[in-house]
Length: 142
Image (cartoon, rainbow, N blue to C red; front, side):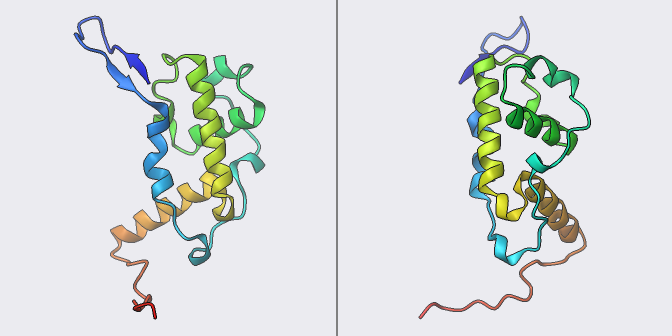
């Protein structure tokens, strides 16, 4: 955990725990066999640009982890890196390492890129009233 003070007027700093960012993500994993997702991971993609917020970490974080951070940023996940500028390099490295582990863990579903694409698809279908479990029939195990 890292103590972060938003401004000089704040009496108490709040705590930032980079590892807690993905607790919900890991709990919300879905059964990849029930969904048709791309079989690419973020590591397979070519990085088009390095976001300014991440540039100072490029030489300190392993290339595959750094590329994943940049790709997530490009995929609209910049909120993950909102505190990037103020957290120590050791926490940046830990977060990048955790992101890569999550990407690899979800590789059958297309990595984090597949997870994001699937989440967007499910949210869009939900707006339209489509139930992704409509064709499922509950059964009591024998």
